[in-house]
Length: 150
Image (cartoon, rainbow, N blue to C red; front, side, top):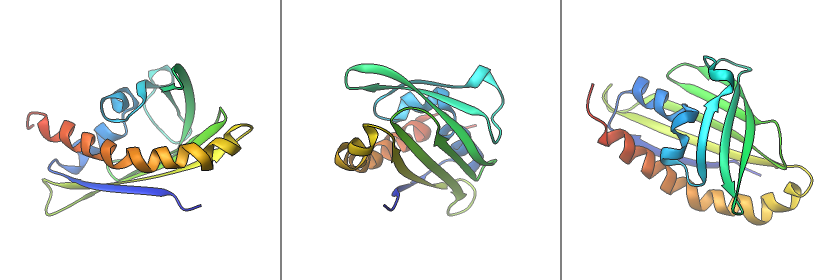
């Protein structure tokens, strides 16, 4: 299936937007269902680094591990889930828009099911992600634009 794609324009410079949108410690601030996140052992992100995200799923908190597969600082970042029944692939692209003071963020999400996840992905997960992505992007915009200027 095709990935779920959402994009939004944010009145902040590309470097600032990229740093925020790809920081797992900030995911809970703008992503529905996320309660925490970090890089493995607080390492500097690089291709192959592990990203840990804790999500509330069905009333329980579950930690999901993803691996960074692409990192082009300030422009592209991608991760792929490596454990659990539902493994997300997320691609984030941040580009300057209308000069350097604004950015366009595009987020593509796709899912791979393992075990029970093979049933959940088409029946629940994709539908839920389609519904959440626009509001997540709007929350991202609101958070970033509310921050004091640098």
